Length: 439
Image (cartoon, rainbow, N blue to C red; front, top):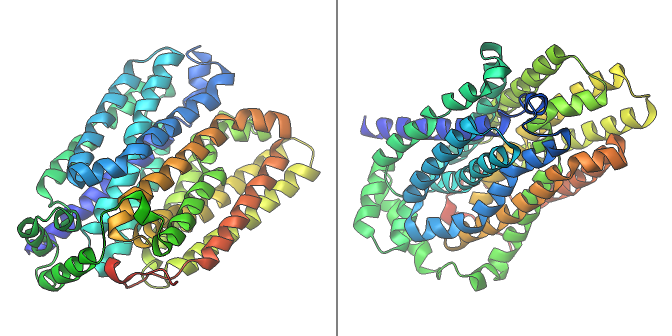
């Protein structure tokens, strides 16, 4: 009963933390045109506004891993929730571009911290047999949050967008309540020589495997030195780190953040000018995103991470190439607009099924415990910087290059991602201590 209660609390934390990330990411998709009509921002500032969140992610990713190693996973999660609250309240009352940008930037800091420390914590306090499902559930909840951020506009007028942000305040408060009840990461505790606390935490996770898990983690820790940069440069750590660094960066270059945060503008530029079609198109994108993530959750521990990643990147590549062909040979108009809408739905679906769902899983599983936080922090720092630059310049790139060339460029990056998917080892069913990159 106690074990069941622990798992329920962990699932609750996984779902709510994923939902707030997806909700905060997607909530601006339909309000950006409204901010322009109210003269809070100009059309030229839309890309900058979208990039503000990713800039916050970039800043957060610089220090979050090190902070999680220094303070512990739980304390950093609590700090993250406080920053979420500040960013949300600030946005509710912001009425100028500078204030809206600043509020979105603060939300981005919280978003970036949550996307790093939460998977780090979840992977270290989950049992091996359902670790993959827990991390995938986090991404599923992330897409669920994006879906909720689309559906909420059916009930709330865009004119009252601050109310949609106010609704989000309940989530960081709920997460705070759950984190206080859950144990600290036993792997972090052992690294800090807090054996008694680590033992207690492992008994909370599963009393039947606690003693064997303690010995396994201690043996792994004894063979590892502290997670300094020089440790990351060892071949056994460097290869998986470089692969993860490339994967995280390529995740951003698929254009997924543009399609999620600014889908309405892309559809309008492609030939769809109906706000109703735009609204239901945005809802359809979120629904497919959510459904694809459910499929991954059901399959991740059955057919393995690698196969799912290959399927997702392959579908993504084909869809982007078809979008390139449509924009290259067809005259601009409503037909191209609807093809683009369908294409975006498939892009988001394949991304959610493969790269989107599994980037956190492979990032946390392929790295040794002593360098995991440092490596993830560096990888997500670079990824956030790449994403910030790409999203912030997307408007200028689409105006100068056109969507056809942009889709072709994205397809090239996805092809590189597919090569990585074929290269990584399978980690299904292995404990974190038993996963090793083949030399």
